[in-house]
Image 1: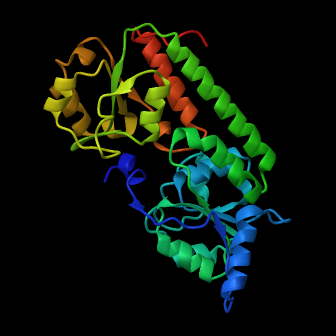
Image 2 (image 1 turned 90 degrees about the vertical axis):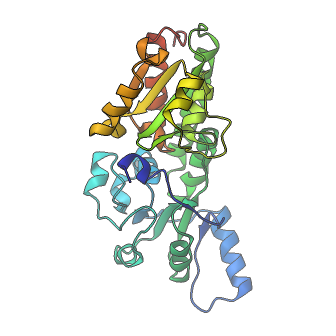
Image 3 (image 1 turned 180 degrees about the vertical axis):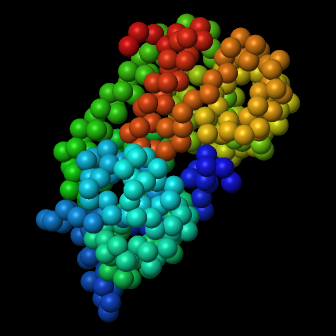
Length: 305
């Protein structure tokens, strides 16, 4: 599995509470009271030792200025650079419970898609508070930040960042409406072999919509469908984006060779871009700006900023 797909693919988990803590011998009534408390209120003392079980959660915590409180991350948490110096507790889909507990966290943050439900349940049984981040779509990110802010003791910073993201998305949308009708359709390649692309329900697909371009695989059922080269020729997107990490080795060059006669390639509309859009965090705005700028330079100007 490539680095690009390692943190995209995961085992979808069953829904579970946003913030939950349990103690041994608690009765059902007490359990419900605790559940309601942690779902709707904030502890008077912000967590000081946080373990993050997802790359996007690590990015969010650092973005909110909580990097010094993060005591553990997964091996896929590679941004910012400081995150790579934190103790690691295993993978995204298979974190080590023992490693997590050994760090003595007062809060573990995780997602409800990718992180195992079993880890959540076992942490709760051990009396460790768990915050579950549920947002999956770009439009859900601002409210998700407002929700997590109080739980991690960064309510003001989260509110400020949420507002900034909402403003940025409005500006991207306005730029798209001013764009000349040069580029209408697009494809975003996640990995070249087997050829896997970003489909419906993904943050990348959401970004394309806001930027005013239609994803040529938006009608498929899978969020990351595998397609063949012939299908790409048949649909012939106006512009193609390829994640930079997937272009390492010979597979990327092989794909480019296969596509050299595609109209988008011949017109210079194939762009290798960063992978900030792969994760639902504030940093995705960098990826959207990169795509918007490339659209401008490709003859489909996205309007003035």
